[in-house]
Figure 1 (cartoon, rainbow, N blue to C red):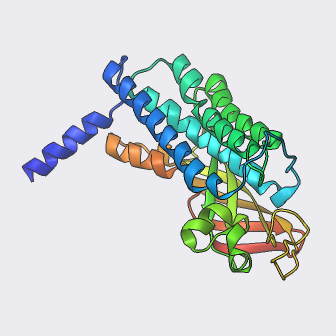
Figure 2 (cartoon, helix red, strand yellow):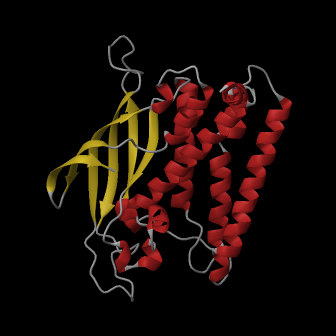
Length: 290
């Protein structure tokens, strides 16, 4: 028991953010992030883009596809990658200004390179809509830090499996791990709003949020016209949600281990009852919504 307690104490101390610049931590963060980004991009280039023919650099206007679910995916990714980048620099004791300049922009930098890859692929193209979404996600993080020095609005994600993926598994994924990333029908993006941050004198728990969600269903391919290998017709429609959520990062604890765990899992919307509003079914109540 003494050894376990000692190990937990060391881990807790390791995860505690540095009050001043810790050069070794900062260097470790930079090397780790650069290595992971490089390996990911090399992997994408070899395992994904290599299967499609190359082309001259070109742009693509895909703003009308997937009922803009893909654009919200870019907002979410840029926001969360930027938050991760800033938090890791905070852990190493880097100044707040440098956290925002170098940390919160890591998502935009990474996603821009991916977008350039798209630009040289005959299958896709460089999308200015995607770039606008990337900048929006990073800007949401930076803007709140500059305005309030805290995140009162958080972009979160939830997912449930649907019957649409089996109809076009090449596009929507085959199996949970692929569908989690590809099947926009099962994805919901949430703007999770912390009420206590706006009403600090109230008795509202500091960790309780109200969440506004957006999703879409009935999509078998990106456009409203069917792919050649898709038999069933598409009937896409938008979904809007109202639910509760938890801001795990506002749960008070002296354990830096728990704080780290809460910070990691705060990207996911906590399942709660939800009201759904859509043009197809009107208002629908979900006892628990993922």
